[in-house]
Structures are given as structure tokens and as C-alpha cells.
Image (tube, rainbow, N blue to C red; front, top):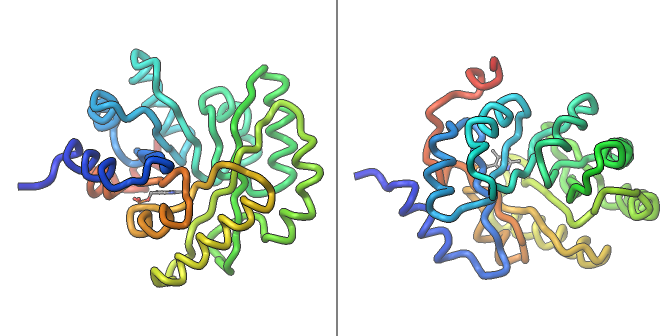
Length: 223
Ligand SMILES: *Cc1c(COP(=O)(O)O)cnc(C)c1O
């Protein structure tokens, strides 16, 4: 018999250290799957595409305690709707994007929690701050009004083995410590144990929680 979402959630919760919270990455999964986990007490959900997320947020508007995290690449022209619909953004990958988020957050009267996305290893597929770029931008980032910069986020490039991922997570944790940032968003279905050991405060887990995707990426992309 296939494991249910309930048993996968219970198994993850049993294994996660108390300092690591579970972000259920629901991209590609329907609102009903989120509702099922919400009924089991899961409140934090991560989405990476605005339109897909909006449809589900509307369908789940009767669940007031859900806590939405935006984890996908954030285009400049989507910052305003994302700030209206998400309390957290894990994917702030440039100073210009953080400045824009601060200006629009002020206009919207919201105080979002932002995590800065780091690229500590070469990765043609992803954006993010290099460590030295972040150190250089840090004085300006700290001055931004309205937004709360609470942590760092990173993703391992394809092809790293688990030991290399462990090293990457440790480097990210060291930089968060240096900048006195409390939150660390690291670890996905394949490497959350290594990330949690390195001090991750948010593991972002999709397939290990929801199972394989019922809907392919292109289907959702077309919405
Ligand atoms: C999809 C996604 C995840 C979850 O990936 P799984 O391997 O399914 O756990 C985590 N983080 C980001 C940024 C994602 O886009």
C-alpha cells in the first residue's frame, strides 16, 4: 500500500529536530492536498508560481491560519501581488529586488519576512548572491525599511553528492551566523537530513511529503 500524506507527515515530524520547521512545498499539488495536510496541523506552505498559488489560496480562503511562503524565482513585476499574498519570500536574489520589495511593502503597509538567496557554488540554473556580493550589499540591505530580512536560503546545484551538500549547507550556516541572521532555508526531499544537521530552520519538502506530482510542470505553467 502506498504511504499516505498523513504517514509521511508524521514520519518527517518525528525525525526533524525541534529547531527545524517543515515548509510543505505544495507546487504542482492541488488545494485538496493542502487542505488534507492543514487538517493534520501543518500550517506553512511553499509555492513557487504566483498564478498557481493564487488559485489555491482562493480555494483555501476558509482556512485562516495558513502561512504562505514564496520560494520561486521572483520577477520584478510580480513583487506587489506576491507581497499581498505571501508573508515570507525565500528567494530574494539581488539588492535591486530587495530594494523594490521594501518600497512596495511600504506602499502596501506590509512587513514581509525576507530570506536572501545565496549561490555559494557555481550553478548556471540558479540566481542568488555570491558570499562577497552579499557582504558588500549587507549595509544597504540592513537599512531597508518595511521588510524584515530574517535569513538566508540556498539550494544545492545538481550533481553534488551528499557530502558536498553538507559542506554547502555548513558554509551557508556560517554566513548566516556572521550576519546574525536567525533563519536558514536549506534542504529539500533529497537532502533535508544534511541540511537539518547543519542548522536549517526551514526544510522545504515537496515530493517526500506529497508524493510524486499528479500534475506536470507545464500543466501548471499554462494556468
Ligand atoms: C520544488 C522545490 C522544493 C521541493 O523540492 P522536493 O525535491 O520536491 O522536496 C524546494 N525548494 C524549492 C525552491 C523548490 O522549487
